[in-house]
Image (cartoon, rainbow, N blue to C red; front, side, top):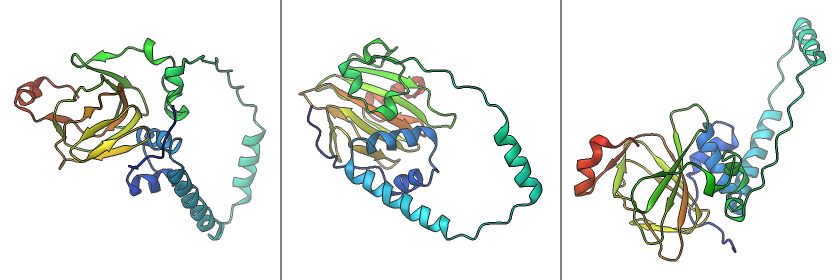
Length: 222
């Protein structure tokens, strides 16, 4: 697969918060995975980190008491637990398409993970990333299939990992990020040439908006 540079990027506030270490873990993983596919945003994060480092260097250091210094040095001398070696995972070619920042959370090949059916053409894999309120999932959509029309009580950040989808705002391919807020009612449709796999981080419930979707909302658990 030949990657092209992404057209759509995380919001600038998210990139700034990532560079400053202020994002929750789920959103940080999404931004880091996008960075693995986007030279432009990698350069921007490097610039922001350099600015932050320069600002930190210009701050006058606070004096440390002799007691605090002695306690710190004593803790450095304490023996620590040896980290247990992690078992290497042999990923298949499909899973290797997932950049490492996200792939490290999978623990196995995509084909062997416990996907949940969300309709005849949609599968979802909830992921345990961090302890915050944001919900992280992988979504697989068959070529040409649509995700039901919906809106959001919070925000939904979606990163395309494979294939592409279209909605009223544009076409999103590998590496692209769409950030949908409560004012967007959309119906993403996978392009017909390939299955679409996306990573989504949602910080509020979804609400289906189609005629049938409204009837299903009381039973919706996402």
